[in-house]
Length: 278
Image (cartoon, rainbow, N blue to C red; front, side):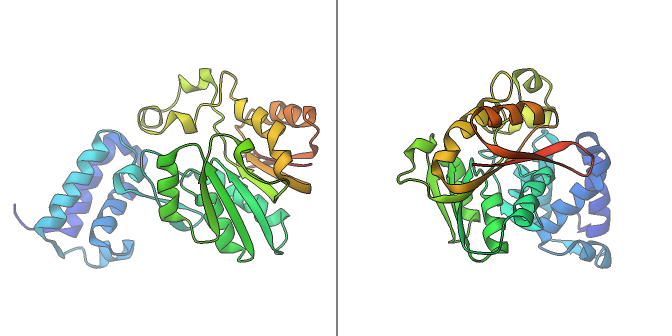
């Protein structure tokens, strides 16, 4: 294999990824190279004439080939970024989305700095719980997921202030009203919407973390009914919702006796976060 310089290699990767990555091909090419070379993005251009060794060239080619199958870049690299932090990911967990950062920001805005213990329901990568306890050092979390594979992923990401538990149902939590608030980014894709997911999502991401039942509301019904049993008096519930689900989720919460149901929108004006009090 002839020597490969960083600059020409970057351009070649970008060209190869154009079909699967489109407008983000350059970004993905940079991500692959910085991942393999373990350098900052700026070094790709400062050191553009530097030579990749054979092992680096082989690793780059292997990652590009995986990406060309349609597998999301985060799974290819085993890394995703959320709230300016890096998290290990695998196909066992949903890739953290930028939209979910609004859930974290809403919680940080509404909750005080005082000591608290919260529940992260359906933790996946553990990103939500991790960011919250790293930002608020007096907070602790219990993060649960029904998937043992997801718990294994979260264990690689979460600090000691996050306790991890595999369980299917909230009823399995021992004790009474223990938590100050519950946070959740639940599965909320309806059966109809599942049929129209982007191919890279439908083919590679875990459907159990996406599918919310026929109308997408199953998990909200469950949280509305059972979460309050594990909250202190005046405890709060924070959930991410789909853009068209605010009215339905609000009705479910009101029907189960939740109070002060509020909806927050993202920067595009789409309903994204619902919060409520017991």
